[in-house]
Amino acid sequence: MLTLEHVGICAKDTVKLKDWYVKVFDFKIVYNNQKEMPTFFLLLEDQSMIEIYPAEHSTEQGTNKHQGVRHLAFGTNDIEKEYQNLQRHQVEIVEELKINPNGVGTVFFRDIEGNILHFIQRPEPLY
Image (cartoon, rainbow, N blue to C red; front, side, top):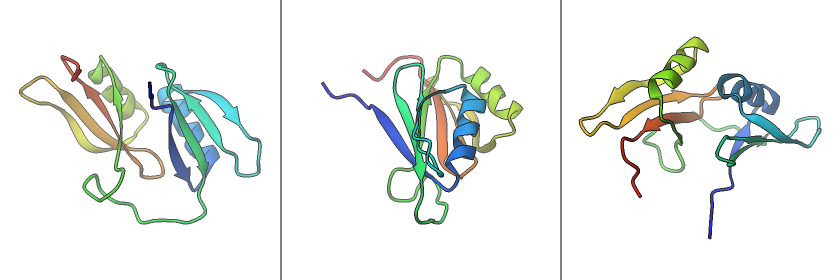
């Protein structure tokens, strides 16, 4: 069986980015290699993780329609609550909260380094 163990985010400032994810989403720090520019693993409630590690090169910020991995999607059963949390933390919203005709809710936003994230709430799972 394969599972998605973690997603890596290469960061300009690993400490600031880690602090943002912990503050906004209350993720738990489960690993810190204690280096000058540390690598962190943050644990989500479903036991998956986000790795935040130091960048060696900068790239231009893209949109959700550029080639490559473009966003991380977090599932939720209360998208309105999560949207209010984003607003409370003054998170940059890319696409406002929408509910489509099938009842699927989405909101797209950026972390402090410009990475695109989004929340999705599905009335029925895809599987």
